Image: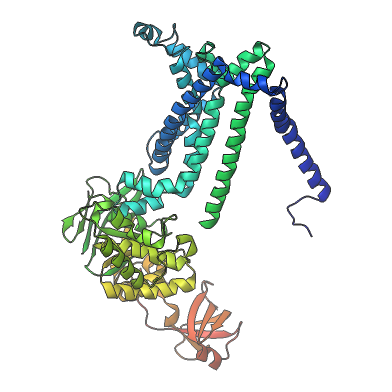
Length: 277
Length: 327
């Protein structure tokens, strides 16, 4: 007798086939296509595309943007989650909604707001020009847009986790005489480490792969303000398909590595949860 | 270390959690805060601990005459045991116990050897020797509770506070731990305040019972006093089974005598509608023939029931032994 909550064999096979078909069509085939197209003109062209000056500059820019956005948003996410879950205060619900704002907003708008604020004709445009400081169409703008778009990832991962864990252990630590930083380091952090890692992984993946918001603020100055996703678009628009796909394999590899690490984290979380029942 | 609670008032927005509460906890005593959910007992305990604070300007908490009302929990020297233990899941038993010592500033922290000795002593005290390296998830509920207790005691607190310490345990384990806690308290003599909703637990364990309800104290006294001389209807009904007679009087099930219907001195005649015999005791539910049909619960010995050959549906008489007037 099969368990009451499963379907009959034919239905099960149909559902599984549908799921596999969707996976293959929407995930595997495109991924495969990227690698196939990248090597269409041979391995030499592939490596040449990656070594090209503009490509290297794009990779460098992407890495810098991620290197700034991820630590900043991790710190912010930790602070926000700590605040929201351990304290009750007025405006708490508002803060939680605001944290989600970058998710609700279209990436193009997320980029446009910075142009409106810091662009030549923006609110702070004249002031910035007077101090000879460029944000839009320069590195700072790309960093700002990336930080904004990846803002919620760590916080969103930590808040439900810390909410579910409650504050009992922290309260116990308080009665035992521990001070704020000690409580965070010895009690809270070890309990959230897998959720934190997960959030950082997602934050990084998005930071490196962001297109829309960065596209609006970057100005597409070849070799100067193109991140990797932008560079791929530029190559594609110039009909340099193999080069475009060659660069795309870098992003595809990033995706695969992220997925792999994500699975590892999930495995350990499951392991930890099972142990702590 | 005695505790003096003076005129504590606590509100959460419009909700009154504690309404001008004053209470004395003598040095070395084991006092129970007893009451239903929402009575304010846990809030009061947390205010004594310093995890919550009374409304500004509303009252004081004194430890041995010293005003600690504004002192944060970490500096009050209280040992707090949470209902669900709140053990640090990723640390071993030994690390849990030494936590309070590990976070002390260097100047106050005992030497490593002394810490190790204290842990060993505490584990022996709570009968968990040999379990230093275990993690909380490898322990039973009762063991976890004892680790929580050892952890609270490691910092040599002046006062021990327990929030429904046995609430999350099986009935059997609860009984054993209750007995153990009383012996333990007698051994170390630390002023202890604990919260419970289980009246049996409060009556069995405490030197002083404080019955609370709706943010107020209904009655304070020894278990004997408040059971024999309850001052309000609530206390009467909360502390054990009680029957309410039509004329407003209260009578305990063991204060009613079973008699044959035709005997002398019978106060009420009624029909047995439920008979429960377990071991040497029997519980008999009787519905009076006249007046309101409210069931009366009677406790008798098995012998009496056998003598009268009592069965469901029998008509019998009840005699009320001298009764205390209730309100």
